[in-house]
Length: 393
Ligand code: SAH
Image (cartoon, rainbow, N blue to C red):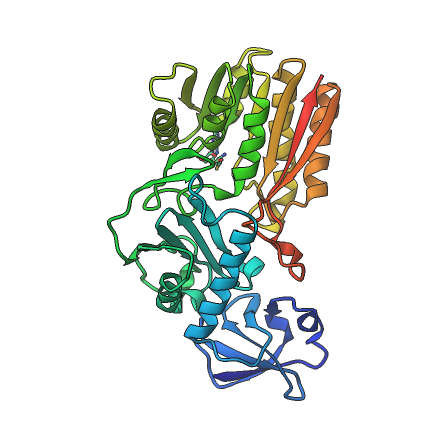
């Protein structure tokens, strides 16, 4: 393993267990690492600090361990077993009525660059770093060896998440098995998971708890699920006793998916209708007071810090439309999944929209990512999903 020497004084954040080493902190490396290689990180004086994956870019190393230990089968087994213990502790793994959860959430599970979502007996593995890509087969073996989790299929899906310059020529595909059932259960509801073509690993696992809250508020309400994708919120709203549920997404494929998922749980139920339309257009054209429960769960408006200003304006514009049209006494669920947008900034964007609309608005709940998307206390950047539930007079 190559040794990476830090500049003097650049070990401070690592002493606080922050898992990233920026390229500016690197003094030199003994040898010539390839992207994805393991490096042993030492101080200017040669004292051991960490082991991690070397990468090209502003983050030079993503730390796997602060212990002087080999990154071998035992390491992967230990990290994944701990991740599973966490999901068992929070009551997600090993349930009959819920077979969908995130097993590995990158830095939150001390595995930077790795995401693993479990759908029944299928695990979808996603690498966000070349280092994790290189280790994918070891990770797959470790997944199969976990006690308390039956994994028969492992689908590897990293085509869009790996740095494209790395030019790995890696196709998405099954590393293990392949004859997988595409229906998974979330809180007793059934969902088709399209890991082959779907966004992320096929499903937005991170909204599970927030969907339950929508279910709680749905009785008798006219629900608008904007940016519905596979329709998670819609299906929960129907179980919650909504009078009607309208799902909107600009993608025709998403509309097919939501219709299929509603049919899977509530065959022939005429309360639901889906529309392939642009969100802003739909909100502008809809009748005043047509809905008294609106969900806004848009894609990340700011993927990077430079896009922040426009993103905040986008959130304000979107929420303003909802405030203008929601029926008095309505409940608005509004989200941002942009990591670059802080909780405070998002709240300010929504506050601005409320003020422009002149409606009286109360915050009922402040929402965030669920326990299977944990945040390492040493890596606050891991916090990305935030939401507000608002009562609009
Ligand atoms: N709420 C979903 C996840 C939303 S992902 C869930 O719980 O699973 C964001 C979705 O917004 C995508 O499906 C994308 O097709 C859709 N989208 C992006 N831009 C849009 C626009 N301008 N109008 C409507 N939908 C849009």
